[in-house]
Image 1 (cartoon, rainbow over the protein chains, first blue to last red):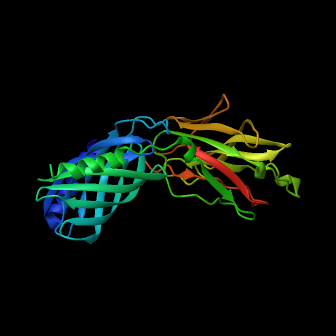
Image 2 (tube, each protein chain N blue to C red; image 1 turned 135 degrees about the horizontal axis):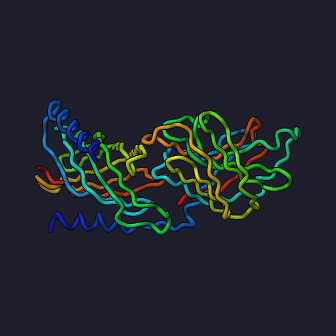
Image 3 (cartoon, rainbow over the protein chains, first blue to last red; image 1 turned 180 degrees about the horizontal axis):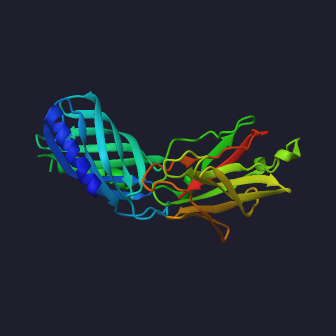
Length: 143
Length: 185
């Protein structure tokens, strides 16, 4: 957890110096082959919708298909916009972090960010987790 | 409400999905003349147990002209230990067609030294459960009510534990297409 806080500090500091823009934060959830995982994320968004931040998720339910132990997964995530309009941004994403405080995991994916109003963004995502597609959703608020 | 509606639809779509266990079997095929299986992908272990079911079929039966190669271990599945290459520190299940039966082994590299332990026999067509657990000090192999402990080498604790997929050999490549079905869970 100390590592995560340190990473969060670095992310905030570096991105603030590099491209100070708004911060978004909120709950995230992901349906994986190993069950549903929920948590939160905080990230910086640049003017061009590049995103860099930290996340934390843990098991909220188990899957019948996988006899998985309780999972805690945290780390850093980034999103690089591939296409965007004034309301929708489609991005490639990359997460890297620690699963159960021991296992280094990298997760490629993609997300669609919908700006529902000035402060609220809805995110739907797809990622590659445990060798299978995982679907995610997030509700992010501009701080 | 305008904001909530798409959110509810999104959540329903995301969290309503459930996989059927039978659909999760992946088929790995090692083509004649090859060592590596098709269907491999880059993935790392995400908790301290690798658990899977596997079934072989009649393609697991083979005879080499040179009988000296018959006891070469083919790899089923496992992982390389924390930030190690698989020939340095790794734990896998291995198999071979030997003495007219399909034999399963615990197969490790510990600080570069290979270690093997016979685990049992499986019939072609039979679905069997395999498990490797990492503890602080050893690998625990479980197969068919048998448990084997093999001490881990000196390695780190936090890092990448790369999954290792089916591989034919040893030195000899697959004499014909070999098909293995695996379902992790």
